Amino acid sequence: MPTLAEKKQTVEAITEDLKSSGAVYITNYSGMSVKEINNMRGEFFEGDIKYKVYKNTLVKRAMDEVGGYEDLYPHLVEQNGFAFVEEELAAPAKVIKKLYEETERPQFKAAVIDGDYYGEDELEKLAAMKSKTEVIGDIVGLLLGPVSNVVGALQAPGRNIAGALETIAEEGDK
Image (tube, rainbow, N blue to C red; front, side, top):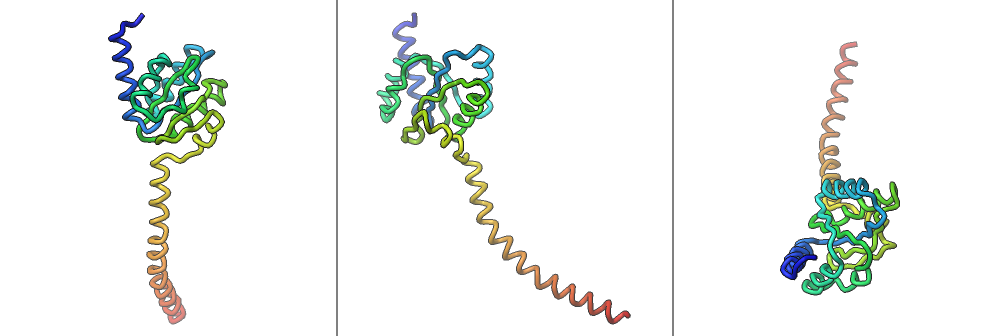
């Protein structure tokens, strides 16, 4: 049994994870083999996602301390794993969805992303969200589109004049 001091340390670690994360996801990992769990941890690690298994009571204490996680309390039952992510807030949903499609585990229970609650029926919506990098790429593409159109339009008359001069020169040589 962990000592009171060890439990306090764990609550402090969870509190820090909650404070530094933009999102926390709860999954039920019961029924998963060791191989499946290790595969899941590897997938999360590749996505720069911290995945931890804690006692639900310790997570609830940390959530109480931080505040704003009350919607997750009903999900703090059974064997849960917690995915914490700072930047790419939809990344855990993509990993969970992929793994669930392959093995029907882990079960997505709920998430809080930037203070908003998402229930178990919203995994598809979360997994479809674009990452921050994808959104920035879309914005850059939209901004560069008009610029490339302007550059193309400015270059077109030069090409047209050069083509016309070349045609005239060819006809004069005949």
